[in-house]
Image (cartoon, rainbow, N blue to C red; front, side, top):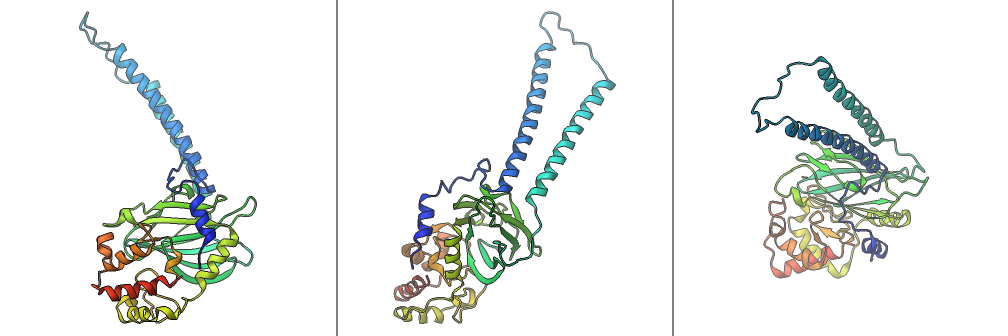
Length: 339
Ligand code: CUA
């Protein structure tokens, strides 16, 4: 089954490579930008004042070549010291207040799922070097399927928010979830659960990046957030919730796949493959990219990936299995049937 709606979104979305926090598309992003502008204005003002006084003093009180004498040396001045202690203290106090208010706006507590809440709950697990998404609840309905690397969420409308609450965990080392236009960074820390929420009224593809150094392929731990209309999102949910399609034309590929050790790490719902260590492949072909956003999910790339994952993403945890050409083609046709 093709995804015309999704393809259309990907085709006409506004520059997904735009990673500027100064063009926010979410309430949290907007709060962060207004705080950043205020901080930049205050610190910029301080820079101008201090720089001007410094330059003035350097020129005004330089040793003049005519008399060669030092200017008068002054030690200690109560009014000046009070002024330069009180003024920065005031500025810091103001910054603490506005930062607290921003935190308040950005960190709202996660509610309980309830019917009719139009709210999506997803558990995100950071792994070396990809993202696991477990869809928990939507609109009060329990979901319980897992996918990888491409987070789908519904778009909000004015007065009709469709929020996504994320529970962030890590399976190995520290990572950080960061989609600049949708909000700030939140770390994924082993043994801890952090939370954040996303909401936007602008559909499209939003790119992001793991923002905490997590090993060799940290730079290729990319984030893709696809924001689509509630109807398209419902269709996607329904499709992803279903077990894998059984296509008899690829039965030889399926047998090859299940004979190999793929099943120890990968899961395909509705089959005996139940590995939880690597990305869930149930609807592999519904994803636009492979290797955590690194390469487009095309037949050619998928073939190269299975042939030697290390050539594409050195250090990643999937080894090359040295498959014969025919086995490779068989496995490839089976994987391509997972739509
Ligand atoms: Cu994950 Cu850097």
